[in-house]
View 1: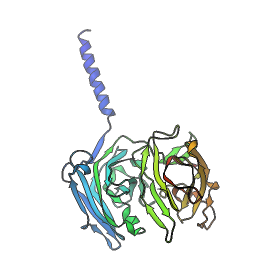
View 2: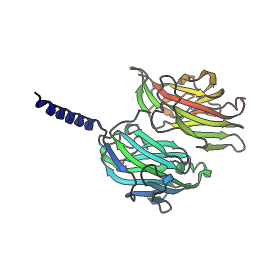
View 3: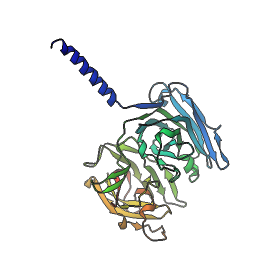
View 4: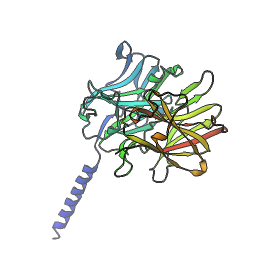
Length: 391
């Protein structure tokens, strides 16, 4: 028996090591940019067609401030000009079978939203957009089943085929927005580092879920992973009025409502002049036809008047005005869609909010329009935003 004991210990150790190896997540590393990048190309799309973008530059960055890990990152410098869509593309067929999440680090010279997409050959591109601050490395971590197609109905089977990914795409939404906001025209740089896929999922932050075991829901956002999907906007009333995007910071914050997870979205902005600050989240590529109510949690640092708005594809908006007090802490709102009313400056042919037509959710501070006072900074926190669906 004494002779068998060492053998048993060796077998137990070997078995333990085998199980640990099986439990370790698998990873497909796309690039860490420790050497000259291969396969990354700058492309541009215009009314007359598309092709390589000679006006943009793709290079290896070695400066410490522009490297997240190791000794290098990818630098993509491009002009933002009206009428031209510019995209950074890695044309590399990749079998992602068994992968569940995408992780990468992004830094931008300008506050914006960066879109990362996985393209199937001659089919749809499945995308995730993330708001990024200027001059700061930010992680984007997203589950692959949370990506949405660039065009609904474009893919015959309606899902991303992980074994048929033909390219990875990255672009700045400024290429779209500059057509509406000419002041965005400028030369910009995006840096990328540590791009990899993992067989391990990150926390679910958007998509189909349940309020209870029997009540289905569409989760707009719970802010539990390292990706910010909301865009800060502002409207300054004047002649003419001035609309701005990404002009104040948003970030993830450890302050969350009881039972609401580990973090929320923090939105800090000034209350000055006749100006409205708000947040916008697109849901236009999701099926909300069964939505009956909108639930969300809000917290303000200064008392104020806020508006929750749902916009349809035809531009009609339905609103609910709410009063929030700082002393109340987190306030959870349960808004039946029928309780939202058509905005005074909006028109709708059928005069009702159609859940299947909802394309975006907006939350704005209208305190000063309602007669409230100024403040150097108000902090609005948002958490647990979801649509309750009919069974």
